[in-house]
Length: 229
Image 1 (cartoon, rainbow, N blue to C red):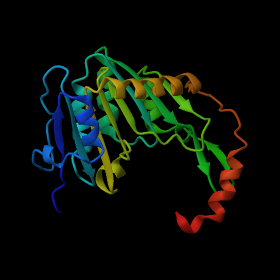
Image 2: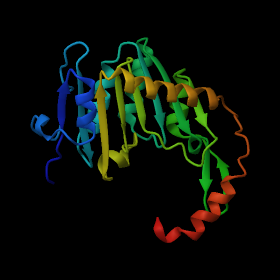
Image 3: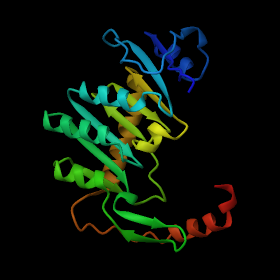
């Protein structure tokens, strides 16, 4: 398999960094290899790494970031089947890092697009986090809570299409962007996380989510547009 390119850049000027994110800074490329260690950045210096799946090192990079977290890790996830990431978050919690996790309702109810209904279930990840005393909230107000985000230590953003899953690492075409030390951008993500934390429900065994009748519309939409999926 051809090696996956990992793009790196750093800049002390936030506006330059935003141009990089817009794809206007090809001159900042610092080489490529399939797996990479986190970039060593001076205090307050902006930087980023990009990982592409399958087998582009995204899971290993995330585990390293979580292992180096010292204060907090906030997580928004749709799919979560990665045992290395699950263990890294539990280990972080056990060493005193504040870990908060928001999961899609599919971790508590299996969605059936044929009937438009839900079957009660508890995902292994949800059960593991709950048993480790990590606070977990369940999103229920949307068809899909499709965010794949981690916010680490008040300065690092992880985002992109990369689910925290085995499939995303090994089989899917995915991307994961890690952004360091862009305070204004982190503040936007942090505010969004806080909103979703406040408007989702804390998980406890036996939690029953409110009925969301508007999902029936989406059920019919999926039936009409099945050829497009």
